[in-house]
Length: 256
Image 1 (cartoon, rainbow, N blue to C red):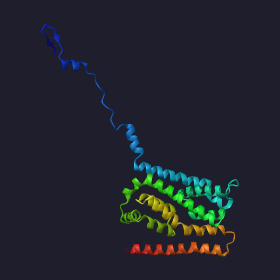
Image 2 (tube, rainbow, N blue to C red; image 1 turned 180 degrees about the vertical axis):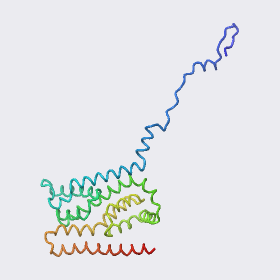
Image 3 (cartoon, rainbow, N blue to C red; image 1 turned 90 degrees about the vertical axis):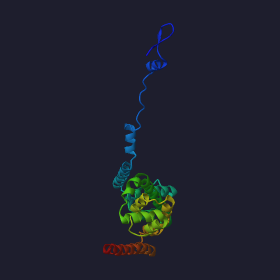
Image 4 (cartoon, rainbow, N blue to C red; image 1 turned 180 degrees about the horizontal axis):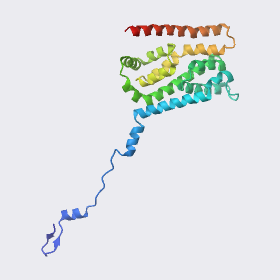
């Protein structure tokens, strides 16, 4: 309230003057606004998993449209040759494996186009490239959403094996016939396996099978040659052995 000075004039107290001169300050914006909410949704684990599934579906559609298996019948474009053709084929090989194209088909194409030795080197380069791309996509876009789903006893055991013994576990998966290439890539990505053990095991474990298919593709024009027959035996015998082992394991698991 106003105070009176000695001359009788009423003056306002400092507190009242400060109250009258105070300017209302708007409240600070809330941290959880619509932009922040949209950002959380877009970068949530399930949104990233949906993006991964959409990318893989789009890649599979592209494979169906462009039909990379035509390389076996039509070959590479005439303007490509030598090292440039090998580099282009290795890059295309890697992208095709991400899009679920079977590796045996690509390995046969590598041998038919480049011969046994260069075809093997090109196919191995594409194998490691494709595995690395799939591993990176699965690790960045799918791991956070899928790891909470590892609740079953067998899933937890497989995850622990891949996480603790990455090199030897992935090496066994690459050497054992019948394990889909893409399945091994994404299972390793969901686990806590490191990049180096994954890529090293992929490169080393893919050599025997890739070499057999590359030689078979290079010698396909002479199906009675010893090299072709040995290559086919190296393909058929491990496949048969893997089928027998899988069948026996299946019955053992049923018995438990």
